[in-house]
Length: 264
Image 1: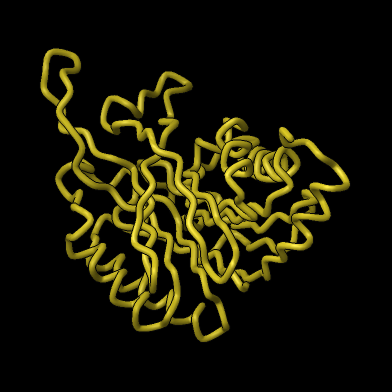
Image 2 (image 1 turned 90 degrees about the vertical axis):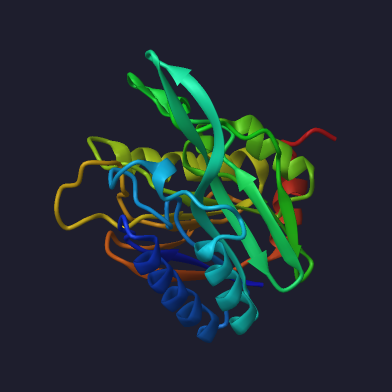
């Protein structure tokens, strides 16, 4: 099964971003992709205004537009968006929190995953505005089982091992991996480490590196497909573009026979 990681640079405008997502899905489908993975925050880039003001439900315009292009192209699309969650009382005020969601949609598939591990690190508290998810999610396409994680989840190997124990041959990871000293090296390290932990393919779709400095974490680019032996199969540069790889379930089985790191 051919999978694509579409590296885009989203903006603060969900309508404009839907056009970008639609064009990327059509391009990937024309190249033979059955699954197209796009970054975290594809509906609205971080640092472009309050997330709760543009968050949409799973039947909102952004999600419905993605469903339309998935149906049109016969692909399954995994794409990052934000949707309303709850209200929390923080620092003397009420905050409308959102879910950081990966929409999963296409012929025969309609599901979503809410990011479980919010980025509460380095004096930043993502959980103040983003409600953590609770549900581990897998889905099947053409006999291949795929698990879903989002960005900071990569720091938590137990989630990836759980997905592998549920039969995942690959884990797709929509991401908005902030730039900074050592961040690219960490990105490539953790994606390869999660492959080593599981014998899975890891498909990380990152936001492209902006040409100008921004107010929020966008991406470093370098979307990547890592093989079950932790070798890099494909890696993008830092600008928008699409990379492709074929998921070989027998390669996963062989890796797990050779190096049985999962519980029996």
